Image (cartoon, rainbow, N blue to C red; front, side):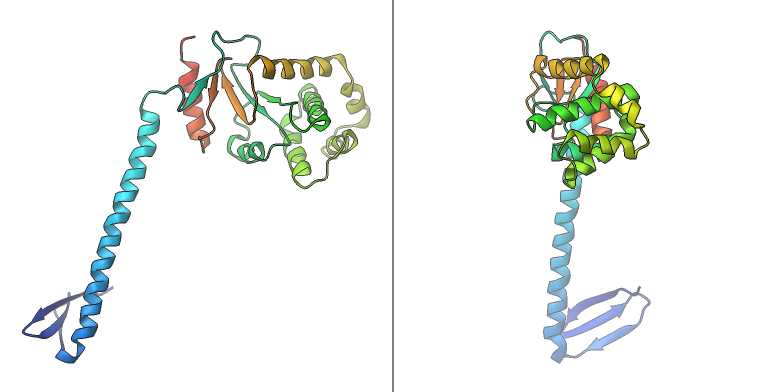
Length: 238
C-alpha cells in the first residue's frame, strides 16, 4: 500500500507519496482535496472513539471478575443457612424453557448435576421431570438431553409416549425403559428434585445453585465466567 500525504501551499495543493515522488495538483482541484482532508479527519475521530470504546469494554470485562464477588451482582444468597442433601453445584432447568435451551450450548458437558424443574408447563413439566429421572437411573443424561430439547423446540413432544420414543431412538430398549418409568427409584428422584426446588425457593429457570445457598445471577454469558464464579462461591464460608 502507498500512503499519500497532502498539504497546501500558496493556494496550490501538493500530493506526496512516501516513496519520494511528488505530484502537483492545480488550484482547480482544491475542492476535491478539501473533501479528502475532511474525510480523513472524520476517519481519525471515528478511530479514536472506537479505540476508547474497546478500551472501556475490555476494562469492564476484566474488572468484573478480578474484583471480589458482590452479593446481588454476581450472585444472590437465597438460603441462609444453606440446605443440605443436594449436590455442591446443581443446575435447575426445564426442557420447556427457551433460555435453558440456549444455556445448554454454553455449559454442555460442564455440569454433572442437573435437576429438572417440574413447576413449568403443567402436567408436561412433571412428565419431563420423570423422564429426566429415568435418564438419571439409566445414566443416559448426556445422550437424551439434546433430543428432548430439540423435540420440545420443534413441537414433536406432547405426551409421555413422545418422550418414550426419544429414549428408544437413542438405543434404550422398550423393556428397560418401561421397567424403570414407574420404579421406586424414579419416583424418589422426582420427589427429590421437586423438594429441592421448593426448599431453595426456585421460581424460575435456568438457575445454578452453589453450596445449597448461592444462586448465580443470569447476566453471565460464557462458561469461563460461570466456572470462575462457581469456583469462588465454592470457597465462600457458610
